Length: 460
Image (cartoon, rainbow, N blue to C red; front, side, top):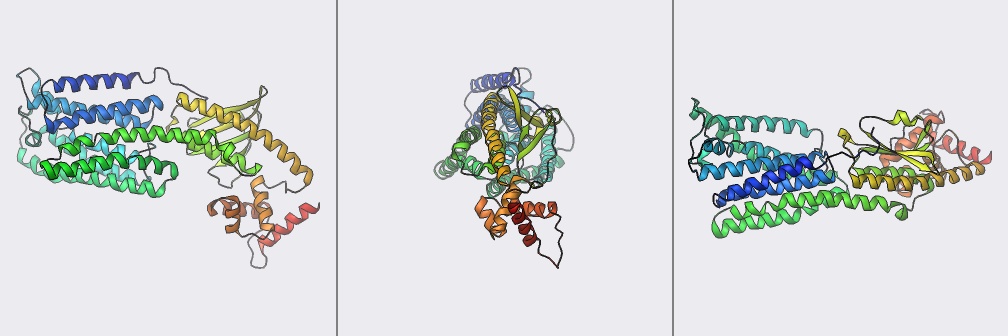
């Protein structure tokens, strides 16, 4: 677990790589403008610049690293093809020309990963791992064949000879043709499939980020069709495709800004009861930090109790000390009021990604809001204890659900009343039955018995 860590020297390597890419593109253009290769240089600049931008905003982010790697590969290909297309007889030109050809499969693979991991750096579902593995093997074999034999030199327009003389060129060409082009086509198909799956399975924030890409993709598609129809060339469309990584980077950063704004204004917008506030705050923390789970804890450094978790599981969380909360993939921020620790916020983020400065500030503001929530809970708990309206062995959420059951509401009606999903309410109902010692029996109705116990507690 980390406590508000800020990486030192962040952004230095991305800026150095961006500078190198700019220099390489300028030197490549100095050899002349070759339209069929120009898109590699522009893509190299776009991917590298966006990657450096993402890593500056969120150091260590997987998607930013992929953008950076894709930009470097595209730039190497651009410069290598410029050298191979217009050789001057200098030493080592055949090696630059070689570097301009065989990394194509690697570039296609990296671009595919960028699409699959957009916008949060994770695959749409874990099942996609085997798809990535199989496709990675096919592209690696294609790159190896292209590195050992000049199977792509004619298509790339390279005028320099291949640096290796390896027998079996005809066989290698046949294998490469049967493997490389189908793999490239599958990659492009996966782009569309991944975006559709992400749209269907994601929430409003991710959908807004995906919608941002509609503009650049539409421009690229229209330009591609126009180029083919008017000039019989895909070059204008390929060049316009360079807008897509720029739009993707803007969507990632803007999406995080939307999450931050939503996080900072959640308390003024919420209309939930006091007992709902911790759970809503936990969900807000997870959304704002891109975390898989989050929790709000109340207590001192020696004993903290989880009063709000997201996602809700209905399971009891044992009290724990502040030291015990610390782990490798958990971010912790203590909640201090009047110089005394009153609670803590935790967020589980895969890969232990360090917080960016803006995320540090956001978490500090959320901790301030958490202090107000904790004070509100203290007052609410006192009033509830005085009214004798709660079963002590049940949590606040369980008591709330039981009270609605006593009013005659079904699980579906409780979901509508509390604005929760059925998957959240059903585990709470089951937990109520378990804590009240009500077993599933054909001779009794557990729901009625639970309501009877609730009514007895009000009369006590």
